[in-house]
Length: 246
Ligand code: ADP
Image (cartoon, rainbow, N blue to C red; front, side, top):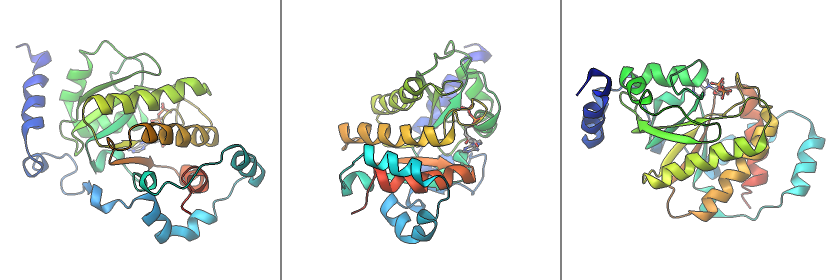
């Protein structure tokens, strides 16, 4: 086995370890965050209703969107979504999604953070994948991350809705194919790739809801990992519209 595919042995070992064994090697030490510490959307709303209702940006846009999108209350689906504020590399779940670039060889932003936290075997594995098309998704091990897997997707540069939709769909399809039940998304394309934040949330929340409706029993939790204040405000504003509570 060449040193370049040494990752295979490490990947196999890690994936066969139980959680206690894996915890010894997490790059974040004991700063990992367990799923049970992340409230589902209804519980989050109960705890934070003040900030959910005071999100500030154009009301007219929200009202227009509300009129166009009438979603039914679905208590089961609501329990399967969460928002988490912070660093995606700390989440101890089945898979985190990486907002990668076409080369899959690492970059800045969340991509850089994921590669740093996973360690060098992640790059070794990515080097064998022959890159990734925009809108597609490919899976690797998580190595020294608390997440068992990383699903790498490549978002569009600029506002290309069908491509961004494809990223979320493909990532969830890859999760289904790998029996992944808990998955976290960063705000794909809204950083360096420049997708407008509000347009992104308006697209992402319905797309994920549709996927959850189609595969209700397969997913335990989809976590929207929010790093910036603007995204916290936007998700707080649009979650009650796409995932109404009563
Ligand atoms: P893209 O190139 O797809 O726009 P970026 O990495 O530039 O990807 O940004 C995507 C989002 O990820 C942004 O909201 C950015 O703030 C966020 N982000 C950056 N680092 C992290 C992190 N460690 N955990 C979660 N989100 C992050």
